[in-house]
Length: 146
Image (cartoon, rainbow, N blue to C red; front, side, top):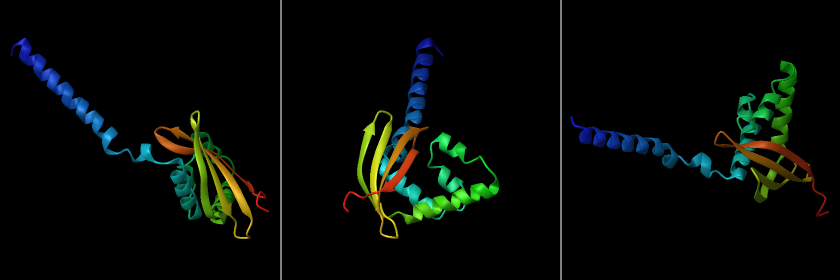
């Protein structure tokens, strides 16, 4: 083989490798295309029927997941039950707005608890390792319409 043939083979080989490396980027944009509010709503649905922390913590930013490793097994079980109840209490949830602020997405929500109490929530999400994850979640009573 002469040098020109070797060069052509290397160029073709490089192009083929480049194409294969781009296939995942173009074939599965589902994680990149997800809306922050859709991820949060999926988290709530998963939390309502969670059997383990893994059902919930996969939606959380790293520091939040690590915080659940503290405490006894009984304490962890009690926290899981509180999270399940809290998620189940959020009825008629509505996404009011979503905005990008620096590296975060801020989702403003409203909901009604089973006792009729109107609630407003704000969730801060961040992208970690290509996934949108919950960085913070805060819910408070909404007295604005009363």
